[in-house]
Image (cartoon, rainbow over all chains, first blue to last red; front, side, top):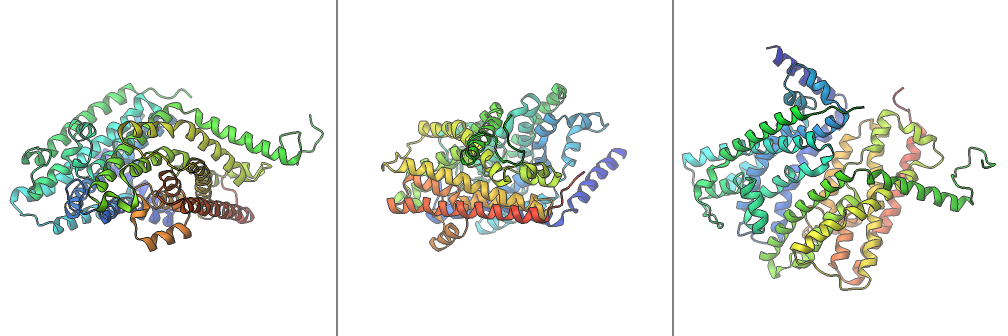
Length: 266
Length: 286
């Protein structure tokens, strides 16, 4: 109970600080949504030049981008702020977090409450809704289950990727933008049919790292399309397993990182 | 010591013109050394540029494969690949993202120290930024281009003037980008907290600068207005179209000319904002 009250106090302080500069806050809210708007817009613009990308029509591609952005926006809202860890490690701010009698990760997330990211989540879910309406999906109970499950599994998966890439800072303070290759890079990767990528690059990102199961395979299962790359239909239902696997690895790496942390000497 | 009083704005004993050139050069050097310190971050950033290069290149080549005549927006596959990889190399040379130094200094009041210096803030920050860009050009430009050349067939420039024009175009893009960031950061003089304008800038410059997709995919009328009325296409799209030889020689030179006009305009605007701000500035902190 005391713990919850502490979290609530941290969160409320953040809300108050966000309301001090109201104009800037409003612009940030819309700016954050804009990032997702432009991701979707990019897909629309590319389809101005071509009727199909990687063998997929615009409607099908929007379903893929909708599943990907819904998962990513939820993850970014919940744990995206963890990418500031490298600043906290460099500055030694993490010391203050570790001496408090609360777990480190929730505290870090509440040190910068992402209220400004709420509209982005709403927009991503709207895109997913439009994509579902635009495609002629033959609904079965299993597919209804899948359309709810996929964004949630995507959120857990991207959340794990956020934590993993941030944890890198425990061992390598100057890791800089390297995490972005997997968080934002992963989002870009999952926004397109994976048939567009070269085989080596695809095998690494889609199958070895698991990004292929977050939006592309579930979209195929929803549309009832056979995978041009040859995976069976049930591959569309693997996203929760992939997500839980990634979350377990992320949790292990995070704990190891916290134990490994040496404060800055200054 | 030199027999001059403290108000003389030089750090050199030669004439005033050569002295200010010397000061400018020294500031460029210090900007260069500042970024040369973070070697590991340079490696990490290069890795990320290369991953994004693969992502964008595969997608655009897939677009080309099924587009009418296999030339979306007038680029062939080799030109698109060059567009993507040079774009990834230029990203940190131009430096669209992440510069909030001026806004932070205004908010904390540290800007007072800059105003005491005998050199105008716009000039001093421009010199430091040119040093940063020079460091970016020497470390961050080559590796993505090399990775692209290893894995994709890149277009080779055919005209003799393309490479010198590209060099000029990059220099102008660096200046325009600096000017834009300075103007965006300057809003902190009026707003205290410039996070909002900086967010808008980060968003607009990426998508309307030509990073996400070649702007030539947009409707013609919209594109002309965008190119002439805003500096954004001059940031990335212009140098990329110059090196990819998207247009004929006259248009190629014309793109650089538009950049030159924008470079002058945006620096003038930055200077104007700085003077207006100094007239009303209340230094924060204390």
